[in-house]
Image (tube, rainbow, N blue to C red; front, side, top):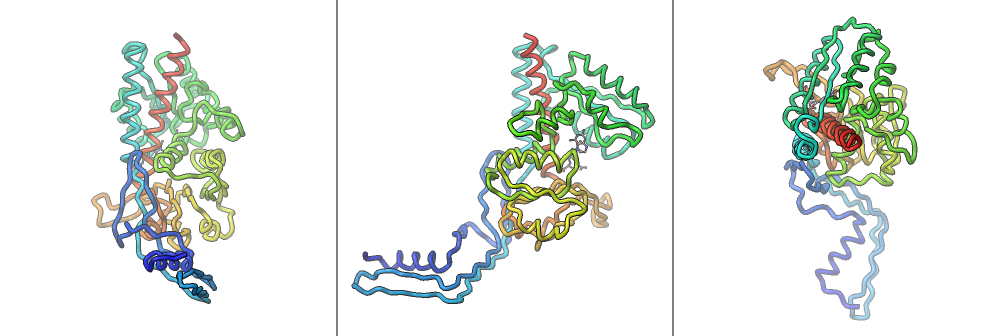
Length: 378
Ligand SMILES: Nc1nc2c(c(=O)[nH]1)N[C@@H](CN(C=O)c1ccc(C(=O)N[C@@H](CCC(=O)O)C(=O)O)cc1)CN2
C-alpha cells in the first residue's frame, strides 16, 4: 500500500497521539454562546494526553516497513479555552414564544373566555425572594397570554385556612394550574398542602402521586417539577446526550436534586446524588460527564473538581457582596463560573441559566393543563 506523505503524516499523528481530534475552532479566550435549539459542540478544553509505547506501522510502498515505537512519550496539548455558554435566557424566550402560539390556538378553538389558560399562584408570608419569583411568574404569564391570579396570604395563616384556599382554586373552572410558592412557613405542613392540589392542576409537579410516578420505571407523571424539567429541556435542546453518561447531582432537595436525579435515570444516565454527608465530593464530581449543582453554596465547585469537557448545569442562586455593583451584591451560582468555564465543554451561567427555564416550563405546564382539561370537557 502506498501512502502520500500528507496522509502518512496524518495517520502517524492519529496513531501516536491516540487523541480525540481537537476542534479547529478553538480560540483561546473566545466565548461561544448557544441559545435556542442550535447545537453546541464542545470546542474547547484543556487536554493532557499521555501516549506510551504506541506502535505506528505503515508501508512506504517501497517494500520497506517502518516500525516506530513511541515509548514513554508525553503528548501534552494544553490550551486555555472556554466552554460554550448554554444561554437559558434565550432558550426560555424561544419556549415562551412556543407557549404563546399554543395559547392562541386554544383560544381559537375554545373561545377567548373559556379557552384562555389560567394560573393561580399562592404566596404565603413576605419573603422577598418568593415575592420576586411570583411576580416574575405573573409577568411571564401576561407575556404569553395566560391569565393569572394571585392569592397573597399572611405569614400566620392556619393550615386549615390554607387548605381551604387550595380547595377553592381546585373548584374554579377558569383556573387550570395551581402553584403554591415554596418554601412555606414552618408551622405549615407542606406535604399536606401539596397533596391537596388537584392532580390535573398540579403544574409544579409536586403532588405526591406525580412525584411517585416520576420515581417509578415505566410510569409517567402528569406534570414534572419546573426546574428539573427546564434542565432536561436545556440538555435536549443543546443536543447533549445522556445515555450511558455519568451524571452527578449535588443536592437532594425535593424541588431540584431528587427530581432531576430521577429524570436523569429515566434518560439512561448513571446517576450519583451527593449531599452533606458525602465524602470526597471533589473526587466524585471529577467523574461527572454531566454535573448538576443545586446545593445553594456560593461558588463551591472549583475548576479542579471538573472533568475536562464536562457539561456543567448550575442551579444555585446565591448573592455575593460586590461593592463594585450598584446593589452592593451580585448573584452567583454554586459553581465558580469563570474558572470552571475554562474546563467544561458547556456551562450554564447564573443568572440567565436554569432560572428563566423554570418559569418557561411553568408556562408550558400550564398550557398543557388547560389543553388537557379543555379537551376532556368537549
Ligand atoms: N412552588 C415552587 N417554589 C419554588 C420553585 C418552584 O419551581 N416552584 N423554585 C424555586 C424558585 N423559583 C421559582 O419559584 C425561581 C428561582 C429563580 C428564577 C430565576 O429566573 N432566576 C433568575 C435570577 C432572578 C433574580 O434576579 O433574582 C436567573 O437565574 O436568571 C425563577 C424561579 C424555589 N421555590
